Amino acid sequence: MVKLRTHTPFSGAAFQKYNARQELTVTVTTVAAFHVQTDGSLQKAASQPEMRLSDVYADPGQPNARLLEVSDFVPFRPATDVVVLGDARSPRGAPSAQWPVSLTIGPLSENLVVHGPRYWQKQENGPWQITPAQEVTSVPLDWRLSAGGPYLVPEEAPEYGDVNIWNPVGPGVIVPGTTSQKYRYPAPQIVGADAPVTTPDDAVIPRNLGPVAPVWRSREQHAGSYDQTWLETQHPFLPPDFNPTFYNAAPPALQAHPFLRGDETVTLSGVDHDADKISFSLPSLAFGAVVTHDNGLTVRQPMNLDFVELDWRQETRALRLCWRSAFPWRDGIATADIGELLFETLFPTGDPQNAAGQNAAG
Image 1 (cartoon, rainbow, N blue to C red):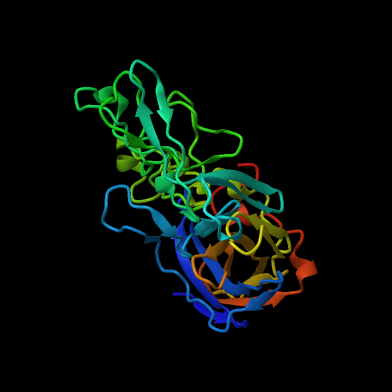
Image 2: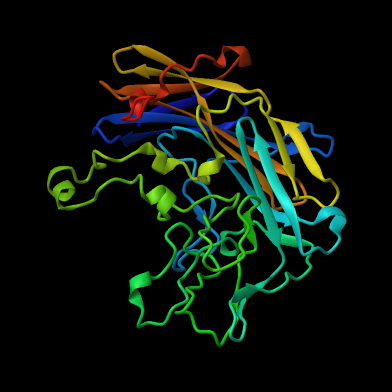
């Protein structure tokens, strides 16, 4: 058990984990929360959040449950995740059939278009078409409204599989010539601004701003090989081909390599009735961790900002940030201390991956 001492007003944690090389490591992490004011300034939340002990799902226990809040107990992330929770909101609160939604932060940018409810409908002796979208004032930034979901085919057509592996919870995938033409089906309401959906044959990559569940393909493909060889030679450790990118829960377009510094400008549009766009800067905080080994040796490392959550679910807009660093266990670690650094000392960060079983080039 590692004793944690936090010298900041923010919550922290230190925990042990084996990496893919079967090496024991200690991860030190801290979280901080702020309120985003209407003028773009940040106010430190009076009540700081506790560490999230596990992932939080919007519909726990259901098949293909949607990941809503990401756990802080992650041993290492090789990139900064950026996610947005909440709804897209129409400009000035006026009902609209569609409007753009965009997020820019540092080198990252994602541009979407959200639509009101619309449907696939087969025209008599004609192609499948999307009906005009209904006018609405808000659209949840929910993966159930992005392309993907179950293949809408009869049971006698199993070759298509059950669901789209990139987004299992989407509204459903039309298969021309196989999907029943008797009904109309929900069409995607959230699509890339550069990839509109016009026919069921469009090769659409599901797009969204919310977190991705670990069993979806964009993360599952990094989990490694859990085969008979692993069971006989590696179990219960991670397989040798495990990639820590698995721990990144943001959509691929919203993962920053290298890590965000923590002073980047954030611009978010299409999510507020009262403003065309909201712009603010991250708070320019930097943290470091010092671990003291059982033999008295101390090791110091800066902590990487590896998670940025923009929570627009409530009237008070919240910003939640998480920093992390991993240390080799070696002969044992007795204590871990977290402290705030002068922001200018954050760089260079060195090679934080040395304790995670993968070097910076991996």
